[in-house]
Image (tube, rainbow, N blue to C red; front, side):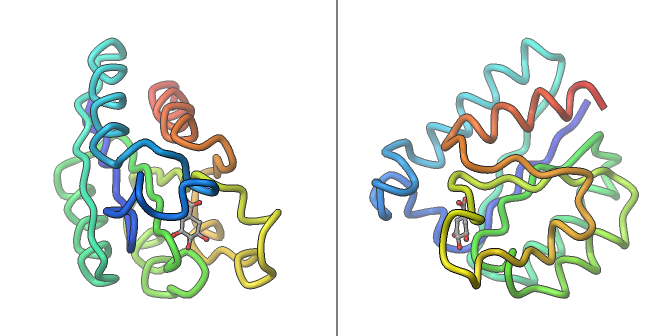
Length: 142
Ligand code: DQA
């Protein structure tokens, strides 16, 4: 089983970026954790990050073309702005699990709307790096 893990803007700064909100682990650390757990679950993980909205759209299409079992998507701030990502999720059949390190609902009002969430299979948010691990477990059971 193939699981794409797509990460949006500023997540390349993880570890250095507002660590009181997002934790001290880097995206590479999370990628390694996912790869290790994935191997135990019989899942190959493909970890990708881009600061560009269209690149994330392209990777959602690519996941579908590669017959991915599921996609984990932390779209960062595009979560709250991107109709293009919403449409891209709707354009594929692979289930997309929305992931956030923080819990956007406890934060500023502009983070309370999620376009991604309107087409996602489900959402896991608020558990720091563990959000990704929980999402992988959920993907394995789909
Ligand atoms: C985030 C939450 C978003 O509101 C924010 O813009 C991010 C990170 C998270 O993982 O908690 O960049 O997606």
